[in-house]
Length: 481
Image (cartoon, rainbow, N blue to C red):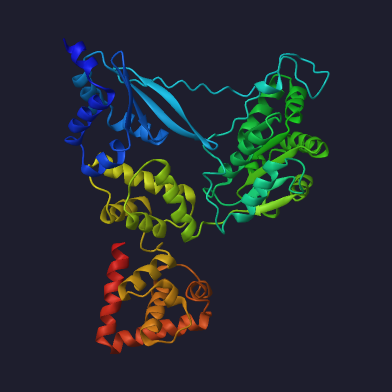
């Protein structure tokens, strides 16, 4: 009887009934964020298939709401009900569903078996150094992270040169003057993402080419294993057969003389045969200590492009892209607050966003500016002392209801000048930036102007009760941030 009733219901009816129950067991914000974007697809043989907007959404549902969903679906369909997901992943320009089966036991069976890169060869001697016996080109796994594409890499002033050069290389690997392409910058700025994006684009444009991404640490480990197994030549020949070699965090080879020596010969062979080499490092070639000079000189043959900390516009764009991709709805003021507060790198920026989502879901709280402030107090050490000039300017300008552009302009109107002076004053008090840097942020003023502004604010605080109130109010807003 129950089966007959279940068959009469459409997949949409079943899912709508499930949503009615789920809505009563989660907060409004969590329902809107995690369940509203879900679409019912099919209902066959007591298996309900639903479509979720991203891999992140799937993982979050599995981790935090699987029990609730399981009980709800079993109530609608029966004890032997099953659930399947269609996960939309962006593969180049097309979205293809990736199906993960989740039986009623609640254990996800995600079939995604990465192929390890072959490093042990099938023959003790290799006659042709470019062809490895038993190993066809198509069998070499490029080891690329498919989510690190150019589409998901946000361009800004901080990375424009590196991105443009990387894209040029991906269109014509080995055929540009950017060989090697040396990408450097501090941790979390997107070196690995960009390196993978180049590799993925090369595979899309030139599927016949052999592309390989490997960390310097893994390269070192493989070389040590090859020495132990007496297969040094096989190791060298394997790497010499690559068309586009991407070595991530090449600084890890510092102090490893034998590994540097073998890499020197691999590099020479690839470069002489117009194969593309892409290297990433946390330092510019000139600042790397412990690397052989002959290697460093070769690193400079092509283009060295640095990645800098993302500016405010880039940080906002990164957060918006991440939120849109994951199908999450967050108030803009919260996004803006995170972008103003986390100024160091992209990894911390995305980490703060994930922490905020976790706080909201686990504590069943709506995502608000207050929740973001409480989370960032724990996420960022010494939040007050690390507050950015950009954020100080925003708080001061919001307090006086003056656009930031106007504050930075050359106007001499009294209220604008006072706003600018207060922004300079708090920037000096609450950041470690130089006077010259503060002046640059406040309309390209010099350090003498910043000093004068700070003295003026101190004088007015002593003589003008109303102005002292301004300082107190703004200080409270910045401290609470």
